[in-house]
Length: 314
Ligand SMILES: NC(=O)c1ccc[n+]([C@@H]2O[C@H](COP(=O)([O-])OP(=O)(O)OC[C@H]3O[C@@H](n4cnc5c(N)ncnc54)[C@H](OP(=O)(O)O)[C@@H]3O)[C@@H](O)[C@H]2O)c1
Image 1 (spheres, protein in one colour):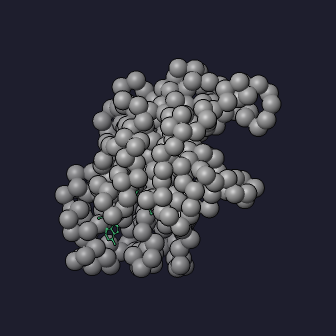
Image 2 (tube, protein in one colour):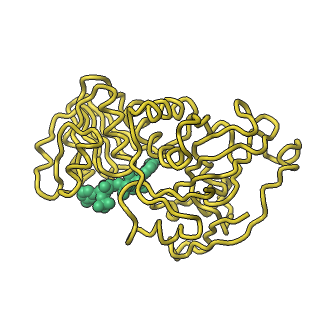
Image 3 (tube, helix red, strand yellow):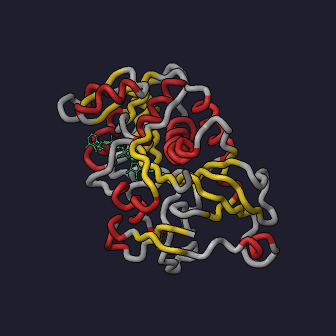
């Protein structure tokens, strides 16, 4: 199969190379040998890659911490199940699926990926594969940040940082859809996009005063650093600060603080797919590129706003 591999941590995205790799060993997968219990083979139609994946330790090692390079990156996947192992529950051969490939195994920038069945959900027939790949990571991250960790409820106010970005635009839409009041942030040039993606109001981080948003029930942070640090104080007593940018340098004294890494969840993927197909949310998909062009499409210096999706099959 054709696949993108990375071999050198220091080379970054320009170090991605398109190569031929062996297809998944379907006979072994279907047998009771080895550790493939619960896996399925996905014929990948579309793949997504998160910008800093090549910095994650799990991109380079297995669960035991052993070097596993060269590795196939890209952990957002949409495609069709072509083989099942023993114990692969809830999916069938020929089924359209989407979800997240395991962090510590080869990913989806390839013609086939082996993924644990529990990390995939059925992709409805009226949601295309590019949308499926584009919404898996962004939708799950937003969902978990808002509702699981952030405990957001209707009538509350949430500050969503980066509301014109891939994750932030999903968070703004899901929060608004759930009946929350959404203050989106971003660069001055993001105002219209953020409002279009569901923010009730917009705070321009280049010109407005962040402190004007003080007293919110929930901050959903994607930045960390100085903005993340200053945002901690915006949460009302008893509220929640949630970040996906790593452990916060400062924690609120009278509010909850959660930093988390997204996990795949079939029930949540199903909820997200339902909202996509009924038009309640729309993923912010930027450039759609072919596998051979993945390195240039994903290059942060030139990439388009929104989620870049790599189309593996037409
Ligand atoms: N922990 C987890 O489980 C998890 C899961 C998914 C994503 N993440 C992380 O979440 C972050 C966001 O991901 P994403 O895919 O949404 O990225 P993205 O699409 O690039 O979105 C970020 C948005 O914030 C804007 N922005 C960046 N720096 C800014 C600044 N200083 N002031 C104002 N706006 C700024 C960006 O604008 P420009 O494009 O103009 O810079 C963009 O609109 C990434 O760091 C990613 O690694 C974490």
